[in-house]
Image (tube, rainbow, N blue to C red; front, side, top):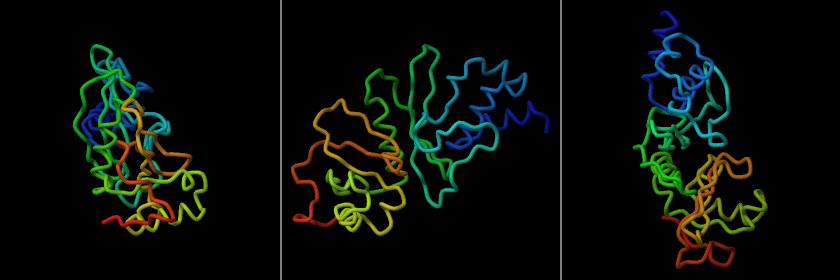
Length: 202
């Protein structure tokens, strides 16, 4: 297969890892076909920096070999220079629907939640993480929080939930070097889980 044909094949592949690989082929102008058809690199879907899998590399892009679906976020600019986002998965070819462009700080929240619906069905029912669990990842509060998640979820990268006091707070990726997002949800009527209010998840 000539390099032009190889680039055409990469351009048609869905999924976050394939998108990121093709993005770097565009950046490095690997063929004349790319130079002709993709003169603007930002119009190619790619993983948003600092989101899972967003490390920069060239060919054969991959992250750690995921043993399960891992949510991430794709972006590209449209013909008018507006940024669009969509959720995606690092372990399979799933991609969410593209969301309308927006300049709001929370424009990526919807696509991120789409990706979590795919990777972590039922995540919206997870308990809210107390501040103590975020400050001490191996402390008693963290261990108590992990016991309220489905088995193995928290250690495998399930999201951490915190109450959102303002509608303008964006979700945060890979919180404090953990392979999970910190997702802000509307402030609940219930209290965040604590030692005194263990509650149940499902």
